[in-house]
View 1 (cartoon, rainbow, N blue to C red):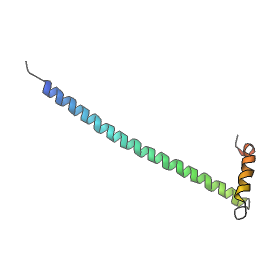
View 2: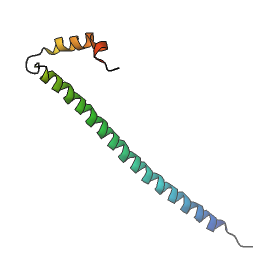
View 3: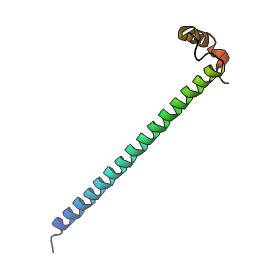
View 4: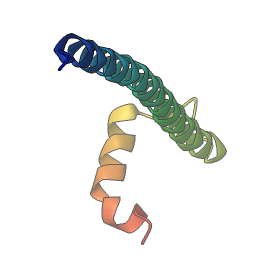
Length: 84
């Protein structure tokens, strides 16, 4: 009867090493995807800000509005302005 314990032990270590490497690779891929998602969301956010600025410009207020008054006007009329 031969002792296969060292061979099995080595086989298990090799499998664990392969799993560990796969986990590291997967984590790197997930990190990259997370960064891409954050970049996309940030871009969408800035596009929304630009769109709001264009509305203020088209209303002829860009160079002459009072930020506090505009803010108050928007907050007071929020329910009328929200898309449904």
